[in-house]
Length: 295
Image (cartoon, rainbow, N blue to C red; front, side, top):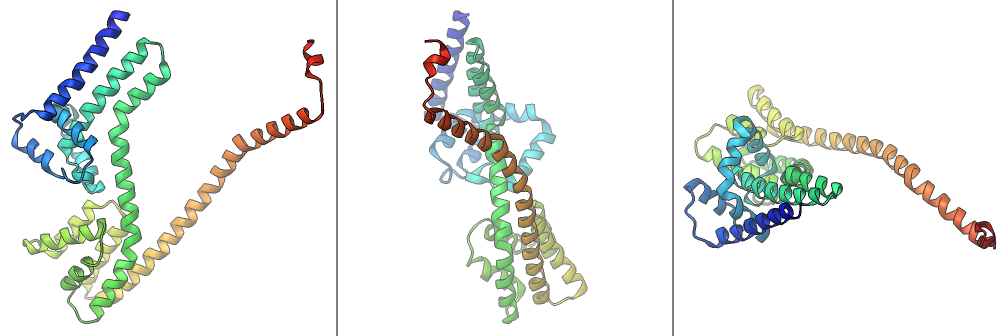
Protein backbone atom coordinates (compact mmCIF):
# COMPACT_ATOMS: atom_id res chain seq x y z
CA UNK A 1 0.00 0.00 0.00
CA UNK A 2 2.76 2.43 0.98
CA UNK A 3 4.73 1.51 -2.14
CA UNK A 4 1.72 2.15 -4.39
CA UNK A 5 1.03 5.46 -2.67
CA UNK A 6 4.65 6.53 -3.13
CA UNK A 7 4.45 5.49 -6.80
CA UNK A 8 1.32 7.58 -7.38
CA UNK A 9 2.84 10.59 -5.67
CA UNK A 10 5.97 10.18 -7.79
CA UNK A 11 3.87 10.10 -10.96
CA UNK A 12 2.07 13.25 -9.86
CA UNK A 13 5.32 15.11 -9.14
CA UNK A 14 6.74 13.95 -12.46
CA UNK A 15 3.64 15.20 -14.25
CA UNK A 16 3.96 18.64 -12.64
CA UNK A 17 7.62 19.01 -13.57
CA UNK A 18 6.96 17.68 -17.07
CA UNK A 19 4.22 20.25 -17.51
CA UNK A 20 6.47 23.09 -16.34
CA UNK A 21 9.23 21.90 -18.66
CA UNK A 22 6.75 21.72 -21.55
CA UNK A 23 5.53 25.20 -20.73
CA UNK A 24 9.05 26.62 -20.87
CA UNK A 25 10.32 24.57 -23.80
CA UNK A 26 9.96 25.66 -27.39
CA UNK A 27 8.05 22.51 -28.32
CA UNK A 28 7.03 21.97 -31.92
CA UNK A 29 3.25 21.75 -32.06
CA UNK A 30 0.95 21.47 -35.08
CA UNK A 31 -0.04 24.80 -36.54
CA UNK A 32 -3.66 24.55 -35.42
CA UNK A 33 -2.61 23.91 -31.82
CA UNK A 34 -0.14 26.80 -31.94
CA UNK A 35 -2.99 29.01 -33.12
CA UNK A 36 -5.20 27.72 -30.31
CA UNK A 37 -2.57 28.78 -27.78
CA UNK A 38 -2.25 32.22 -29.35
CA UNK A 39 -5.98 32.95 -29.56
CA UNK A 40 -6.98 34.89 -26.50
CA UNK A 41 -3.54 34.63 -24.88
CA UNK A 42 -3.85 38.23 -23.71
CA UNK A 43 -7.33 37.66 -22.28
CA UNK A 44 -6.81 34.49 -20.23
CA UNK A 45 -5.22 34.30 -16.80
CA UNK A 46 -1.75 33.00 -15.99
CA UNK A 47 -3.11 29.77 -14.46
CA UNK A 48 -5.32 28.98 -17.45
CA UNK A 49 -2.46 29.74 -19.82
CA UNK A 50 -0.18 27.38 -17.92
CA UNK A 51 -2.85 24.66 -17.91
CA UNK A 52 -3.39 25.10 -21.66
CA UNK A 53 0.30 24.71 -22.42
CA UNK A 54 0.61 21.68 -20.16
CA UNK A 55 -2.31 19.90 -21.79
CA UNK A 56 -2.11 21.04 -25.40
CA UNK A 57 -0.01 18.04 -26.44
CA UNK A 58 -2.79 15.75 -25.28
CA UNK A 59 -5.66 17.76 -26.80
CA UNK A 60 -5.83 15.67 -30.02
CA UNK A 61 -6.08 12.44 -27.99
CA UNK A 62 -8.88 13.92 -25.86
CA UNK A 63 -10.76 15.05 -28.97
CA UNK A 64 -10.45 11.57 -30.49
CA UNK A 65 -11.82 10.02 -27.29
CA UNK A 66 -14.72 12.48 -27.29
CA UNK A 67 -15.76 11.58 -30.83
CA UNK A 68 -17.18 13.81 -33.57
CA UNK A 69 -20.62 14.25 -31.97
CA UNK A 70 -19.24 15.34 -28.61
CA UNK A 71 -16.72 17.64 -30.29
CA UNK A 72 -19.52 19.31 -32.26
CA UNK A 73 -21.62 19.59 -29.09
CA UNK A 74 -18.85 21.30 -27.11
CA UNK A 75 -17.87 23.50 -30.03
CA UNK A 76 -21.46 24.72 -29.97
CA UNK A 77 -21.27 25.32 -26.20
CA UNK A 78 -18.06 27.32 -26.61
CA UNK A 79 -19.80 29.46 -29.24
CA UNK A 80 -22.73 30.02 -26.86
CA UNK A 81 -20.27 31.04 -24.13
CA UNK A 82 -18.69 33.57 -26.48
CA UNK A 83 -15.21 31.98 -26.42
CA UNK A 84 -14.47 33.25 -22.87
CA UNK A 85 -10.80 34.11 -22.47
CA UNK A 86 -10.10 33.02 -26.05
CA UNK A 87 -11.37 29.49 -25.36
CA UNK A 88 -11.31 27.15 -28.36
CA UNK A 89 -12.14 23.47 -28.67
CA UNK A 90 -8.42 22.64 -28.51
CA UNK A 91 -7.92 24.67 -25.35
CA UNK A 92 -10.99 23.02 -23.85
CA UNK A 93 -9.57 19.57 -24.59
CA UNK A 94 -6.22 20.59 -23.08
CA UNK A 95 -7.90 21.68 -19.86
CA UNK A 96 -9.89 18.47 -19.66
CA UNK A 97 -6.66 16.51 -19.98
CA UNK A 98 -4.87 18.42 -17.21
CA UNK A 99 -7.79 18.62 -14.79
CA UNK A 100 -8.67 14.99 -15.45
CA UNK A 101 -5.10 13.88 -14.70
CA UNK A 102 -4.76 15.97 -11.54
CA UNK A 103 -8.18 15.03 -10.19
CA UNK A 104 -7.75 11.36 -11.09
CA UNK A 105 -4.32 11.01 -9.47
CA UNK A 106 -5.39 12.97 -6.40
CA UNK A 107 -8.55 10.89 -6.11
CA UNK A 108 -6.57 7.64 -6.24
CA UNK A 109 -4.20 8.89 -3.54
CA UNK A 110 -7.06 9.70 -1.16
CA UNK A 111 -8.83 6.45 -2.08
CA UNK A 112 -5.79 4.49 -0.93
CA UNK A 113 -5.84 6.49 2.30
CA UNK A 114 -9.51 5.59 2.83
CA UNK A 115 -10.80 9.17 2.52
CA UNK A 116 -13.94 8.56 0.47
CA UNK A 117 -15.21 12.16 0.61
CA UNK A 118 -12.03 13.70 -0.83
CA UNK A 119 -11.89 10.90 -3.41
CA UNK A 120 -15.38 11.74 -4.65
CA UNK A 121 -14.64 15.47 -4.65
CA UNK A 122 -11.45 15.04 -6.68
CA UNK A 123 -13.08 12.66 -9.15
CA UNK A 124 -15.92 15.19 -9.56
CA UNK A 125 -13.29 17.91 -10.08
CA UNK A 126 -11.65 15.80 -12.80
CA UNK A 127 -14.94 15.17 -14.58
CA UNK A 128 -16.84 18.45 -14.22
CA UNK A 129 -14.55 21.39 -13.42
CA UNK A 130 -14.18 22.42 -17.06
CA UNK A 131 -17.93 21.94 -17.55
CA UNK A 132 -18.76 24.22 -14.62
CA UNK A 133 -16.72 27.09 -16.07
CA UNK A 134 -18.30 26.66 -19.50
CA UNK A 135 -21.84 26.42 -18.11
CA UNK A 136 -21.33 29.53 -15.98
CA UNK A 137 -19.99 31.51 -18.97
CA UNK A 138 -22.99 30.50 -21.11
CA UNK A 139 -25.47 31.54 -18.43
CA UNK A 140 -23.81 34.88 -17.67
CA UNK A 141 -23.50 35.78 -21.35
CA UNK A 142 -27.14 34.91 -22.05
CA UNK A 143 -28.34 37.04 -19.12
CA UNK A 144 -26.23 40.02 -20.22
CA UNK A 145 -27.53 39.81 -23.80
CA UNK A 146 -31.16 39.59 -22.70
CA UNK A 147 -30.76 42.58 -20.39
CA UNK A 148 -29.10 44.65 -23.13
CA UNK A 149 -31.37 43.80 -26.05
CA UNK A 150 -34.55 45.83 -25.19
CA UNK A 151 -32.62 49.08 -24.65
CA UNK A 152 -30.57 48.39 -27.78
CA UNK A 153 -33.75 48.01 -29.84
CA UNK A 154 -35.21 51.26 -28.47
CA UNK A 155 -32.07 53.20 -29.43
CA UNK A 156 -31.96 51.45 -32.80
CA UNK A 157 -35.59 52.43 -33.48
CA UNK A 158 -34.82 56.07 -32.68
CA UNK A 159 -31.80 56.11 -34.99
CA UNK A 160 -33.70 54.44 -37.84
CA UNK A 161 -36.64 56.83 -37.44
CA UNK A 162 -34.16 59.72 -37.73
CA UNK A 163 -33.56 58.66 -41.34
CA UNK A 164 -30.48 56.46 -41.16
CA UNK A 165 -30.52 53.14 -43.03
CA UNK A 166 -30.90 49.94 -41.04
CA UNK A 167 -27.38 48.72 -41.82
CA UNK A 168 -25.80 52.04 -40.89
CA UNK A 169 -28.02 52.36 -37.82
CA UNK A 170 -26.89 48.95 -36.55
CA UNK A 171 -23.26 49.96 -36.96
CA UNK A 172 -23.79 53.33 -35.26
CA UNK A 173 -25.66 51.91 -32.25
CA UNK A 174 -23.34 48.92 -31.81
CA UNK A 175 -20.35 51.28 -31.63
CA UNK A 176 -21.95 52.91 -28.56
CA UNK A 177 -22.38 49.63 -26.71
CA UNK A 178 -19.93 47.22 -25.12
CA UNK A 179 -20.37 43.60 -24.17
CA UNK A 180 -21.42 40.35 -25.84
CA UNK A 181 -24.42 41.72 -27.72
CA UNK A 182 -22.41 44.53 -29.32
CA UNK A 183 -19.77 41.93 -30.26
CA UNK A 184 -22.44 39.77 -31.89
CA UNK A 185 -23.76 42.69 -33.93
CA UNK A 186 -20.24 43.55 -35.10
CA UNK A 187 -19.69 39.95 -36.17
CA UNK A 188 -22.97 40.03 -38.09
CA UNK A 189 -22.07 43.29 -39.81
CA UNK A 190 -18.65 41.91 -40.71
CA UNK A 191 -20.25 38.86 -42.27
CA UNK A 192 -22.49 41.10 -44.34
CA UNK A 193 -19.47 43.14 -45.44
CA UNK A 194 -17.82 39.92 -46.63
CA UNK A 195 -20.75 39.13 -48.93
CA UNK A 196 -23.16 37.16 -46.75
CA UNK A 197 -26.82 38.06 -47.24
CA UNK A 198 -28.57 39.87 -44.41
CA UNK A 199 -30.98 37.00 -43.89
CA UNK A 200 -28.18 34.45 -43.61
CA UNK A 201 -26.08 36.69 -41.36
CA UNK A 202 -28.94 37.10 -38.90
CA UNK A 203 -29.66 33.38 -39.08
CA UNK A 204 -26.05 32.82 -37.98
CA UNK A 205 -26.62 35.33 -35.18
CA UNK A 206 -29.56 33.25 -33.95
CA UNK A 207 -27.52 30.05 -34.19
CA UNK A 208 -24.69 31.48 -32.06
CA UNK A 209 -27.06 32.51 -29.25
CA UNK A 210 -29.34 30.15 -27.37
CA UNK A 211 -31.68 32.93 -26.33
CA UNK A 212 -35.40 33.23 -26.90
CA UNK A 213 -35.17 37.01 -27.17
CA UNK A 214 -32.46 36.86 -29.85
CA UNK A 215 -34.61 34.36 -31.76
CA UNK A 216 -37.57 36.78 -31.47
CA UNK A 217 -35.42 39.63 -32.78
CA UNK A 218 -34.18 37.70 -35.81
CA UNK A 219 -37.62 36.25 -36.60
CA UNK A 220 -39.27 39.66 -36.39
CA UNK A 221 -36.68 41.20 -38.71
CA UNK A 222 -37.04 38.41 -41.26
CA UNK A 223 -40.83 38.52 -41.18
CA UNK A 224 -40.85 42.30 -41.42
CA UNK A 225 -38.55 42.12 -44.43
CA UNK A 226 -40.84 39.59 -46.14
CA UNK A 227 -44.08 41.44 -45.36
CA UNK A 228 -42.74 44.96 -45.86
CA UNK A 229 -43.65 46.09 -42.34
CA UNK A 230 -42.05 49.35 -41.09
CA UNK A 231 -38.85 48.45 -39.27
CA UNK A 232 -39.33 51.13 -36.58
CA UNK A 233 -42.72 49.77 -35.52
CA UNK A 234 -41.29 46.26 -35.47
CA UNK A 235 -38.38 47.27 -33.22
CA UNK A 236 -40.56 49.21 -30.75
CA UNK A 237 -43.10 46.40 -30.51
CA UNK A 238 -40.35 43.85 -30.07
CA UNK A 239 -38.72 45.82 -27.23
CA UNK A 240 -42.06 46.02 -25.41
CA UNK A 241 -42.62 42.28 -25.80
CA UNK A 242 -39.14 41.55 -24.45
CA UNK A 243 -39.69 43.72 -21.38
CA UNK A 244 -43.02 42.02 -20.78
CA UNK A 245 -41.32 38.63 -21.06
CA UNK A 246 -38.58 39.73 -18.64
CA UNK A 247 -41.21 40.81 -16.11
CA UNK A 248 -43.01 37.47 -16.42
CA UNK A 249 -39.75 35.57 -15.98
CA UNK A 250 -38.90 37.63 -12.90
CA UNK A 251 -42.29 36.82 -11.37
CA UNK A 252 -41.80 33.11 -12.10
CA UNK A 253 -38.35 33.14 -10.50
CA UNK A 254 -39.75 34.88 -7.43
CA UNK A 255 -42.55 32.33 -7.19
CA UNK A 256 -40.05 29.48 -7.36
CA UNK A 257 -37.81 31.12 -4.76
CA UNK A 258 -40.51 31.28 -2.05
CA UNK A 259 -40.85 27.47 -1.53
CA UNK A 260 -37.05 27.09 -1.55
CA UNK A 261 -36.65 29.80 1.09
CA UNK A 262 -39.43 28.23 3.18
CA UNK A 263 -37.78 24.82 3.00
CA UNK A 264 -34.40 26.23 4.06
CA UNK A 265 -35.98 28.08 6.99
CA UNK A 266 -37.95 25.01 8.09
CA UNK A 267 -35.00 22.66 7.74
CA UNK A 268 -32.20 24.69 9.28
CA UNK A 269 -33.21 27.95 10.92
CA UNK A 270 -36.23 26.78 12.95
CA UNK A 271 -34.46 23.77 14.58
CA UNK A 272 -31.35 25.88 15.26
CA UNK A 273 -33.48 28.63 16.85
CA UNK A 274 -35.34 26.10 19.01
CA UNK A 275 -32.06 24.57 20.19
CA UNK A 276 -30.67 28.01 20.99
CA UNK A 277 -33.78 29.01 22.96
CA UNK A 278 -33.87 25.69 24.80
CA UNK A 279 -30.20 25.93 25.72
CA UNK A 280 -30.67 29.51 26.96
CA UNK A 281 -33.67 28.55 29.12
CA UNK A 282 -31.86 25.54 30.52
CA UNK A 283 -28.73 27.48 31.37
CA UNK A 284 -30.73 30.35 32.85
CA UNK A 285 -32.79 28.06 35.09
CA UNK A 286 -29.88 27.49 37.44
CA UNK A 287 -30.10 23.71 37.13
CA UNK A 288 -27.23 21.83 38.78
CA UNK A 289 -26.07 19.52 36.02
CA UNK A 290 -23.84 17.66 38.45
CA UNK A 291 -26.87 16.11 40.13
CA UNK A 292 -28.23 14.99 36.79
CA UNK A 293 -24.99 13.25 35.83
CA UNK A 294 -24.42 11.78 39.27
CA UNK A 295 -21.17 13.67 39.89
